[in-house]
Image (tube, rainbow, N blue to C red; front, side, top):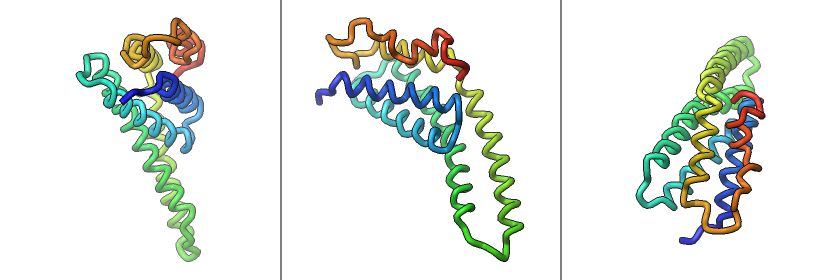
Amino acid sequence: MPVDEAQSRAVFQKLSRQLSKLANKPAASNVHKFRTYSRRVEALVEALVANPKRKDKRLLKLLARLRKKAGRVRDLDVQIAALRSLKLPQEAERKSQLLRILVDERAAREQKLGKAFDQEQVSRNCCVYWRTSGLRGRGGWRGRLTNNKFLNFANGSNGVL
């Protein structure tokens, strides 16, 4: 199945954008979008690479690990949203107590997620993967990788992940 180079590049760029947004502000929507785009990258790599090499497996393993940690944060986001929408006037105190516990747990999970985002490891693996993978195609790309945000991360110009 032929895959458009622009579409595959867009998937990596969207993941890159979500990495920077998640690093700056780990809001519920940013966590959700990161998980979505990381699954898309994983599906793209698995669909296009018949015999995965070491770098393919390393990228997939890294994304799976980050997505799992983000999933734990996302689960708490969903629970918090469900609890906030629940109408229990007679149990307001218990609801607020449970909400505080969930928010504290989310903060702890968010901190673990932040530690998992080692700037050099994430950016270097994704950038190197894109440059050396067969996903780029044959033409049209020619050195324009410097506009890629993964290179900006690797150079340290976009803050800490």
